[in-house]
Amino acid sequence: AQTVTQSQPEMSVQEAETVTLSCTYDTSESDYYLFWYKQPPSRQMILVIRQEAYKQQNATENRFSVNFQKAAKSFSLKISDSQLGDAAMYFCAYRSVFMEYGNKLVFGAGTILRVKS
Amino acid sequence: ETGVTQTPRHLVMGMTNKKSLKCEQHLGHNAMYWYKQSAKKPLELMFVYSLEERVENNSVPSRFSPECPNSSHLFLHLHTLQPEDSALYLCASSQEGHSRRGEQFFGPGTRLTVL
Image (cartoon, rainbow over the protein chains, first blue to last red):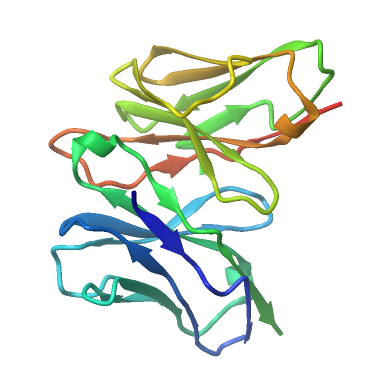
């Protein structure tokens, strides 16, 4: 079974600075999807960024980018120019492309990001 | 975000009550999900419906009963719950099949408290 590990329960960053959130996962598959979701205090789970494992190029979405290291099974999220609105719980998630695993998203435990003004 | 809506947003119920949670997606997706989010626990997938058929049930107690009447609506019927069932219940949807991109879109959740 696949597992996702987020080793940082909490992180802090100064407004306008850069922070990196770590995620590692365990799988025997060669193709899969990886995601970062953000859950602010409103509790709405929001998709931040998506990566397909067969693509070597790291995904970027405005101030958010990932460092995808397939061999190391690492998928970190970098937030540049941090803003107060970035404060939230961030979840890393894995999904198999194979139908025998259904449509399941496997989530990590989450990292709370605090942004200081 | 209005792609996936959930009602009610908050619910307090006694252990002998019967209530239902409702989810509606406006994204034209063909799969819907119920997740449970408890304090200090990872999100737990409860049920998956794909093309209105239940394709996964992760050993969820029978006091939780899902219903998916069509691809846009999903219900979670609750009866004789326990205090440990208090949690945030999240609904999600996705597009499966050839146009699949893998991601799921979530609703705002229902905060359930069982007294």
